[in-house]
Length: 105
Image 1: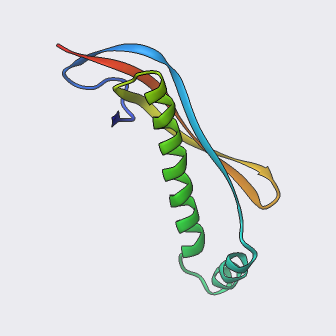
Image 2: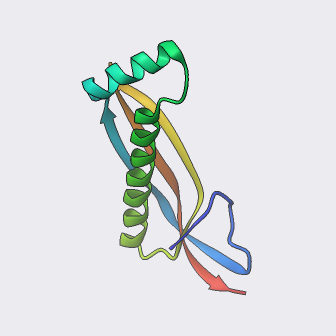
């Protein structure tokens, strides 16, 4: 499955199938939160949160791709990511794009 943040795939015409989404909601782990709080005092990368967000992006993208496969898509174009706080200590990561069928030109 081709996944791109552009509106087209070079060398192909596209047939739009629809918008697809994938999301995940993640909460902070109290142990990791304490470690991150300590690093916040002394500075440096908050590795615990970097890993959590990377995992969340992968999961959201995989879910979006699975939705596109259900539509019979060959690709997802114009892919974007967004986040929002759902409650204190928890955030949603959303991946979305347009599922398309490709035709070689």
